[in-house]
Image 1: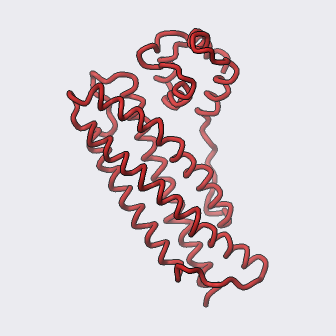
Image 2 (image 1 turned 180 degrees about the vertical axis):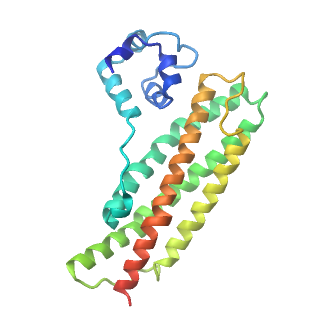
Image 3 (image 1 turned 90 degrees about the vertical axis):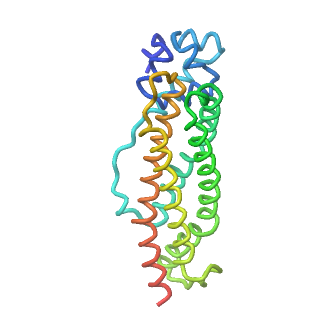
Length: 239
């Protein structure tokens, strides 16, 4: 990654938009001042080169494909929370900031940006609440079921009744957010940046597209793997 030091900041983001989040965290302007090298940007902003290179490397790593159907319930839950839940939490603040900036700068020429911003802000609030319900209510009980089976002890029924109750609620909320992002995609013309769009415009749309793609993976793991396995185990323990 050391050769990035002589690359222009804007060019780094253009090649991999995930770098934008790192630059934003370090206070480096990749849009209006993207024509300077990373070395110069670090010098001007008093940023240690070693630290930002490490963060840039971590930001662009693409994980190897794994077979989640082979995961136990606890391992699958841990993967969902550390990978997808944390991704959502970490992506919301910069995306909100970028969309707010786009509305301020480009909103008059592109009124659809206000709708995109409103839809994303609603999704951010809904997903934050949704994930907390999973992490505080459903997921702990699923982990407890797996522990009960492996340790051969009985487990009392949860306060929410049959496990299908929270699972059905989570699936309904998944469907709501899936529909919301289909609307965002439509409003953004498939996340295509208009000809007058700036670098922030490109980054925001690229991040929105990645957010939707991650949401699809996230929902798939829960709806198609975790929830069916958890339901099966629940009925094994509660015949």
